[in-house]
Length: 136
Image (tube, rainbow, N blue to C red; front, top):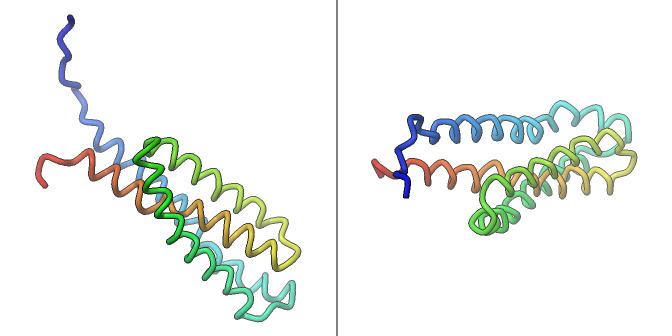
């Protein structure tokens, strides 16, 4: 049997870099709602309360979906979970360009983007923690 040699590169730092990039992309999409808040309110004559409810819904969905993404990460691994959540967030962001009714805002931003954002916290943090166990 061949000897398993220790890899020359510690891939923990690659995992950290990938996690940072994923977090920047996901949080950037999520945080961009503030830029579009006033134009959405003005264009569709929605009140501030109705428009901001989408951000509240996204935050609630993100928190609840984090429970599921944690379990999915344990079962299928972070690569699958973060990719799936990133796709959800991306689809939600793309569909936001087609919003013409309030229910669409709640569905695309609140549910799709909120559930996609759940990957920005639990799976990425847990994955980085698993790579750095030596000095815990």
